[in-house]
Length: 368
Length: 246
Image 1 (tube, chains in turn orange, cyan):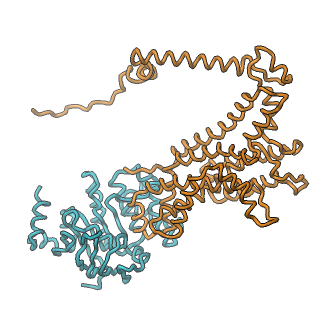
Image 2 (cartoon, rainbow over the protein chains, first blue to last red):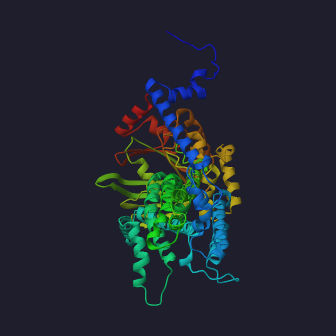
Image 3 (cartoon, one colour):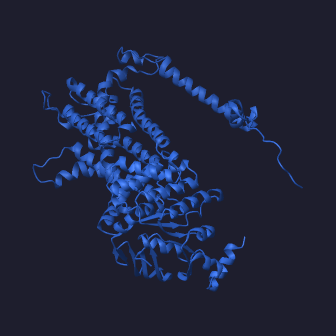
């Protein structure tokens, strides 16, 4: 039998009932009787939950502040007034009340800088300079003691500025450290450097963060000579960065392992130095391969900053606890914690949204 | 023979206890084209990878353009500056555009300005006929286009000798020709070339001498008409019988 095509078959659109949202909906949610029942049951439960939340959080809620007694009246839902009442305590902790505009400015400054840093066309050396100046400015605003600003020691800092600086500086200092550790550990050459990296990573990962923080806040001062004093915030910050580095290093090492040998051979054949090969060939590919895992660590540690409450640092979570403990406004902890959760959610979801976008826009690791 | 630009003397290489390259002696004159063929596992690739120091070897020496590599090492930077290499799997840098692939080497090792390196790279991409894809990433190019970019990338370093490690072996049949045409044009321009390939048509057309290897050993070296017309070693005859019987 012989067949020879006599005409070209023109491309046609797919049949209507195979595409479109109706078809997809039917396929995914109402494929069988069982699936339809589950779909309807879950939809009803979801609707009920949404309605309860709406009546409590919006319809019956009190937004205006008429004192705690108004909130305790029967039939009143959420008492958002408490968030307004305690807003400055939650956001700025025990920072001197009259000076809290400085803490506010510091927060805005860091947030603006974080937002700017997401723009890839700004990824040049000036960005590092800008960060250095922003951090300096943060210090000036928060500590004061110059330009007519009154001095506020860092054991009086609190709330969002502390959480932000712990997370930002902890991650920013931990990240380069992690890359260094990962490169050392991944190196084929055995030596002191590699042994150190392995020991550091394994030891740090096998100790709870809590223990590391206690060590930093309680033990280190015992070892320092009399009169030497490093502020507790700084000690905790360093401990945090060192702890993050150990976890991130393993993530980065995973990325390093994903680089095919051929890439190194091509770089060698071109005569590229080890430094150029690492900076221009290996790291860009390794890091972009593990963006999801890196962001995972970032998000985990952003929230882990709340652990510093145990060593008496006044971060966002500590401030929320303090606000919820007010005897006058007792019983409205839910509202306060929901508000704090929303703040954490805003930062964490921004990170995961940005990581998704970064993965889409970075040049693909396109092996054919 | 004029003074050789590549000279391999008594080279031996082992993978563990496996004697992969046995007593290799080979010289390549300036502007000479040598094709190395042989069955897979015969040590062809290992041999050319020893030339630019990507693989170490245990005894013997390699001299390239006045620089000597020995088992103890040698000036790898000087050798790699003189020797370009094209791989079977292209090995382009996937996060860089075709043009950036070509300029990274010259800018970072030959201290060329970005502008000069780009001009030179574009001229070479033009020469291998992929200039219109200069700003695409490797993943956006076909295999044949990627391999031609890889050739341009090696040429950007202005090598005195080009090594080809089975450059067409992972290409679809339709794309083999475009890469071979590029290599023929390169040969005609007077480039010294050492090619490991199974493309016997290319060998016949371009090679000055053909080297047949089996089991880590050079069994026969002959000009193409003698190699194909009257192969002397029985293994060569068997190999050619298998390769040329279509």
